[in-house]
Image (cartoon, rainbow, N blue to C red):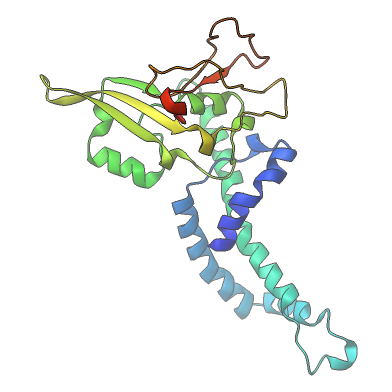
Length: 247
């Protein structure tokens, strides 16, 4: 499991350097842990009970001097190979998930993703919100980060890690109707957004103006005062007290 988490976190610089964000789909860390756990058992069985064990036996002896083949075993190469197999799980899952997503979108082009809803979430959170019936609000706002990611995946800070589970849903209650009627989805900007500060054409700057009346931040094309529009056409407006939550 930890080998998979290591890959999910530290493969990010390579993916972003190669600009491969559009080739991978963020993976739910919880599902990733379950997948790696179930994957490890069969993998261990195959490597120990099939002819694949001969390959690992060769790895254990490849760095041992010929004169000491019957006396020494060097397990470093075999261990690294086995860890590499485990560490590849998130890459395979993420790549296949993106393939399925593209295939699904291609054949259902008339269906648009509703990023604002609780259904667009990791499986455990989706079940929780469904159980509470919090998806029935008539008015929904927010989730601008996910619209941005769909427009250009390079803005994802961690291409392999789903950050949807960290989102905050704020609900407005109607006392007369005795029901939730308004939902705002907030995303933690620092955890999800790469503002592309090293690419001038894509950079999303932070608005220098203060917004003390904003409860949460906003990502849009609006310009405050005489501020020049950035090449990307977008900017982040922090809420009161430099609030990192963005609608």
